[in-house]
Structure formats: C-alpha cells, structure tokens
Length: 145
Image 1 (cartoon, rainbow, N blue to C red):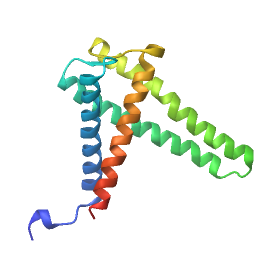
Image 2: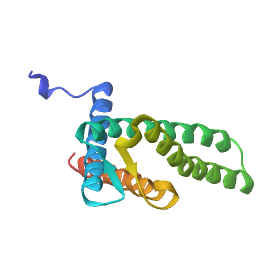
Image 3: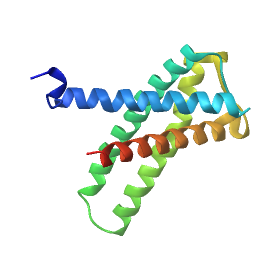
C-alpha cells in the first residue's frame, strides 16, 4: 500500500493538530497586524515564532487548568464547585497577562499590542480570535470524516 493510504498514528495526529493550530494562529496574528492598528508585528518571521510560542503557552495553560480541576473534581459540594470554576477562570484569564509578559520579554519592540491595560485588551481579543478560529477549523475537519 502507498504510505498515504495508511491510517495516521497518534504522533502523526498530534503533529497535524498542532501544525494546523500554529498555522491558524499565524493567519489570525497576521490578519490582526494588517487590519487593526492596535496590533503591530515587525514581520512574517516574527509572527511565525510568536504563533509557535503562543501555541506552547496556550497548551501549558490548558494543562495547568486541567491539573487544578482534577483537585476539585474529587470533592463535592457547592463551595468546591464554585472554587473549581473560579480557579479555572483565574488561570485562563490570568494566563493572558503572563503570555503578554512573555511575548514582551521575547520579542521586545518587534511585537506590540496597544490600547487599554497596556495592550492586554487587544492581546485578549487576538487570543480569543485565535481560539475561535482553531475551533472552527477543527469542527470543519471533523465533519469531513
């Protein structure tokens, strides 16, 4: 059989998933940089590295959120349920400020997010758009099966 006819293994599926996510993030970053004055990226190479870094940071955030959620899932009651959702919100929202700080440290003047809260609003808008675009592409891909 031809190699392309073989079913992909787990490593190949993960590679495809993250490769697709990075490309989607790259497209979203560059669209914002081109069409919104609050996002400035010096060039394509910088945006490519930024897309990879953001994907790594997003996956680390999700891993942390899931790990913390496991602590609360073992407990029952309204207080524990509240604490689970509050901790998830705190991690998911707070991580955007950590990510923005990492982007600033890594890229300096090459990547700028401008506007309220030292650009955090613009950065959060970009990340939400990236996640939305990733989800849309994933749903389209899954419907092809």
